[in-house]
Structure formats: C-alpha cells, structure tokens
Image 1 (tube, one colour):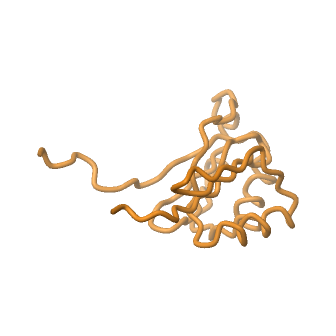
Image 2 (tube, rainbow, N blue to C red; image 1 turned 120 degrees about the horizontal axis):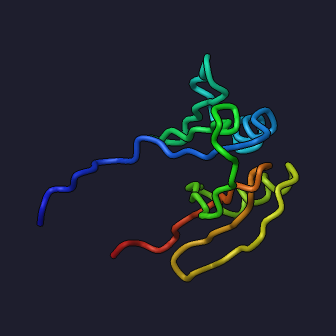
Image 3 (tube, rainbow, N blue to C red; image 1 turned 45 degrees about the vertical axis):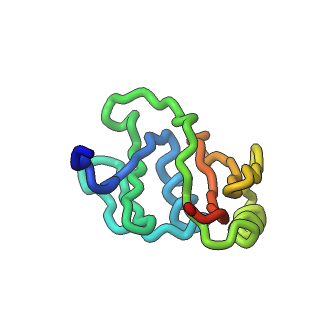
Length: 125
C-alpha cells in the first residue's frame, strides 16, 4: 500500500452571508471555541476537536454566496443529549437516521449550510 499523501484534515470552511448570525451560532449554539477572527476579511476560525472550522463572508471578497448542501458531520459523544441541547436552542432537524452503525441528525446553520451531528455506536471489528 502506498503511503497516504494527506495525514489529517487541517480545516474545512463554509461561506456565509449573515456573518454575525452564523458566527454566533457556531460559538453559542454549537459551543465551538473561536480561535481567530480575521482582521482584513470577515472570517473566523472555530476549533472542533483536532480540526478547524472556518466561517467566511464570501460576498465581502466578491464571492457569491451559495450554501453548502453536503452535510459536514460533527462527532458527538452522546447523540440524544446533543440533539436535545440543539433542539432547546431552536435547531430543527431535517432528518434523523439510525443506520445500524451510527446515529445521524441533519440540520442547517442560519445561512442554510448543511450540518449533522454524528455518533458511531458500532465497533470497527
């Protein structure tokens, strides 16, 4: 087997149109720690485990806003507790799935970027 080119995911990002609402959502509802707010552009980095989640105001640099419709999976330790906490903050789930291997709950951030909470309960054996 050939050694992998990539060893980890450094960051993922979504473009937003309502920067203030979306950054408040990631920080206050999802509980991600904001580690950097960009000075010259409207962007921020949020820590999520070993990865960095970037929220970037695309229109402020001339990039048209189109929401990401491919859900980014956010790992949770306790699916039901995470779902209940999000629902108590006003998050509405579009779909909840028990695949037989994992639980997945699909929802959107305030600008319509697709997210999910995910918990794998089956072992890899």
